[in-house]
Image (cartoon, rainbow, N blue to C red; front, side, top):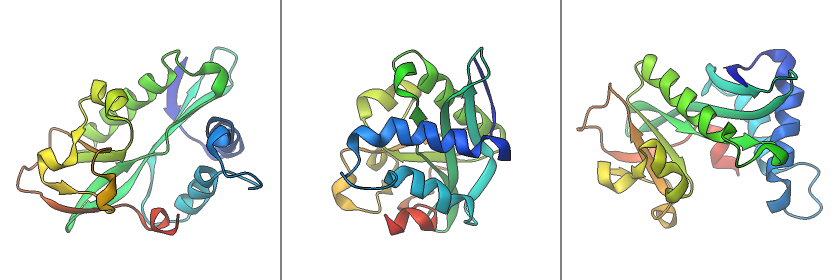
Amino acid sequence: MIIRRETPADIDAVHAVTEAAFRPRAEPGRDETIEVGLLRALRGDDGWIPALSLVAVDDEGEIVGHVLCTRATVGDTPVLGLGPLSVRPDRQRGGVGKALVHTVLGAADAMGEPLVALLGDPNYYGRFGFQLSDTHGVTPPVPEWQPHFQVRTLHAHDPSVRGLFAYAGPFNEL
């Protein structure tokens, strides 16, 4: 398996992987999952960062996973929001998600980004160095998210950056 940047030719495969990964939790009757709609909207948003849209490709050349970081803010400071993270169901629990998260965090760090935030399971994301956001003075956009809203600081982190986190615009339309 290799991890590489998404190309325009990958978009349909990324949508298929994301659809398959999130379909079991989707509302019945929806044509596509919320996460696929979010990807479509993010691609047209100023918060889209092509260098941080990564795919996992297996030995047969098939895309089996995808991860994305988009521009976000803490107060007025540019930071990143991670998600969605998608792995094809038949490849879940095999290290694909782990490889994608490690790679996108490394890429974000190399780009000089200060921190990455996400909404997710602390037991899963804790292995990557994520901590509950209040540990770093970052407030989630929805107060009820606090038990699951996490931050991973990177080398360019400034501890004085504190305040309300805001995702890229399309997240607000969910």
